[in-house]
Length: 259
Image 1 (cartoon, rainbow, N blue to C red):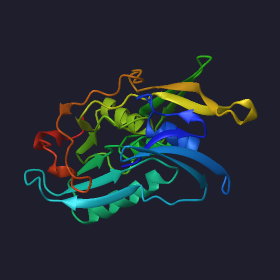
Image 2: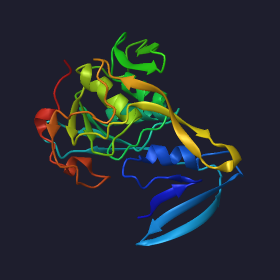
Image 3: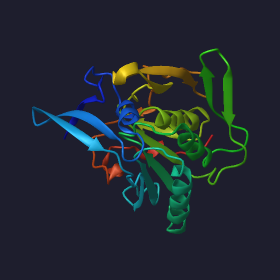
């Protein structure tokens, strides 16, 4: 596939940039233009793009009966988080339950994050009231403690979260909230480790911009995941199709009742 090298003067070939970092630079007012340098099949290519609205199907769900000892498993694949993700996931969970789902698998492999509230609100669907979800600590040390207000949609069904090395940011916030509250088993690979809130501050004379860190995330147990990631409960290979998460070697024991 294509690899982003540079967007609007900012380089992304340092090996540390996430898709989230690139997205911040690519986004902008409708009709404005942005310069992009990409690598395609070993060749460097320059593009001038005109920004326009795009609609991404960020949540897909399906049923799997591969876990005979568990029963039907409802799989919800979340590609990124937006302001509507939680309501979409809620609808998917209700639909899968009607179809007989006895447990759920949240597949966030390759999920770079997106909007923090999307991750927080999605985690809340599976948590009881007054459960800590995330602490956002700004540069002056002020802590914004975010917790659930009311009981979520599903507090009883076993939940497994499938992650990989590209699971980052808001996806890590959701994963940590469910893991550290004893609500889900995390399987896969160590996550990326992006636990900071950043914005792009423009430089003068259209000389690009610099990423400015505004705050950092801490998990419910006050772990700082930045540059460390989340350690999985059960390490497994994540090299299975994106539309067949249960083809990954997830043990039936991962689907356990909530603590």
